[in-house]
Length: 411
Ligand SMILES: [Zn+2]
Image (cartoon, rainbow, N blue to C red):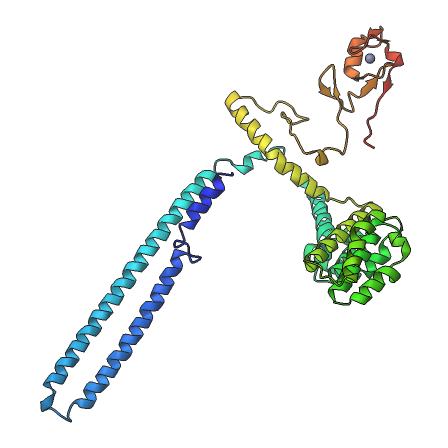
């Protein structure tokens, strides 16, 4: 991929004139325009010429031999110019069209070759059952509500719910959970933090960051004294009480700059950063307080899917050369490595004796020595509970009666 893109760019650049922003095909338009202007000029010239000839006939016949010779030369010149203009236009248009068409063919050939190297539809095995459509729609609705409710051209609770329903077909039971969140985010984006301040918990980091944002916005409007008073008097002490580190790193420098009358560099940029920080903090707290997932399930699933793709392709090429088929029904025949934040949801335990993942049918059991085995290997070692056996890891003797069922929970 890293080589493919530069090559493609190189090929696409050839559709443009050297170092120019204009594609070559635009040159045809320009040339045609110029040709038309030339023709108009020549036409005007000829019209003038005809008038002159008409005006002069009948007035002075005999002294005009010189004059008509001159006119003849002028006419010849016009014809020459006309022919030249036409030749130039024709040549340039033909050349540019040909070049563009050839380049298009080249790019198409290149893309066809690359794009068909892998057929995406071949990956679609284990098809989703048709009845899962309703669940997918719910997940999409949830995703849209989670991420977009703060960016809608609608204001107020009822209007937002109605908009989501009419435009995206999202039912109220899904969207209503996000409406308050969206309203507060919208308020903040419009420079009004009061609804978020009201929502934030006393003494929380969010509350502190919101007051800092307000102070920066006040300062942006140029009122130094008001900003100073706001920070020292109007902000409730509780907002700063537990935030010593932030006060030292954020508020103190701001106050010092105010006192010294210094300008703050990139104030606008800093305000934008602070606003984004507040919105993200608020969203996080709102979701956790209302027991909503911070990331939409759909987003995490699609991310996992995109990451798994490479493993699938690799497996498929191995399978094609080794002539093996799908062997397992319950799990994919290859391991996919996902980043940590996609795998911390439920614990996976592999039985160290059988090298198999424990399941509901084959759950893990702990021995008196606290080593853990799967039920199948326990049955095997204890000959179905009829004898004591030695733990595979340490010299402790165990019997099936002394084992206990284990449940892994990720806290
Ligand atoms: Zn042991």
